[in-house]
Length: 269
Ligand SMILES: Nc1ncnc2c1ncn2[C@@H]1O[C@H](COP(=O)(O)OP(=O)(O)OP(=O)(O)O)[C@@H](O)[C@H]1O
Ligand SMILES: [Mg+2]
Image 1: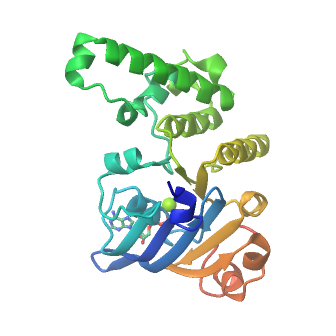
Image 2 (image 1 turned 120 degrees about the horizontal axis):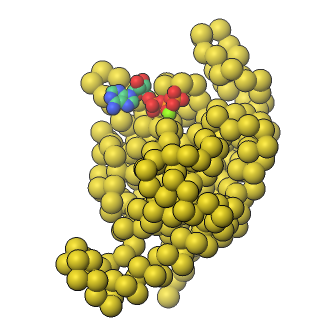
Image 3 (image 1 turned 30 degrees about the vertical axis):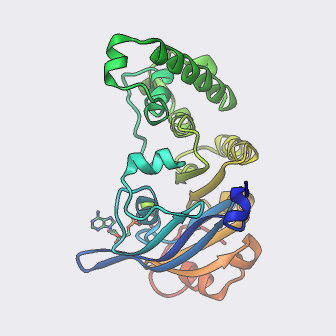
């Protein structure tokens, strides 16, 4: 059988001419992006540039106004969020979305529903299939929590965790769905410098497991240190794309960040 790598030529995600409008607002405008398999790609740009909207289009929260999203050689445009998770894309959100009154382990298990096939009836009857799936998922959850150095906290309530660990728990929850592509919306926001160093290691570990990572981030040092490719959005359009060196020296990027158009990224490139 031809490997999926050959099938899509090493590109796991193709954003093809995607536009997303909300009334008169063009949040994403005729965007084309190819994401390399097993790469770490950053999407940057000023507030309101369309970064989160792009994630929402890819994960099925919005169905793009026009254009196509091709994942692993398959057109996933307009698929529902739960289908997208099953197909192999999971994400975290810009704001923490944990169940504060549930434990760390329970929060991770919530992310696994799409991977277990036992239905509601077997859940009620607790059939053997259900129990087998449940224990396999739990084993997987413990492995992921171990990798994210959260395993000593499995029985803690998520709401009591410090903010940095809550953000890490969200990554764990996204991983239990066994994604091929992981989207992280501002994973370093609100983290202190040592937590950012740990996050960098975690993201690199995830990638070394064969998972492609796309992250939205405002912290330029973090972006420049971790990314192979950076895509720069401004007013919904791609204004630059390249490796950190290329992007840092791109005239359009410098103008968008430091120019006279009223943007303030709050960072030095
Ligand atoms: N559901 C929606 N309805 C109407 N307008 C929206 C909606 N979602 C996003 N927008 C608008 O689309 C534009 C892009 O927003 P988006 O949240 O994608 O930006 P962003 O790049 O993620 O910004 P930030 O860095 O602040 O998170 C903004 O003008 C925003 O107000
Ligand atoms: Mg956003």
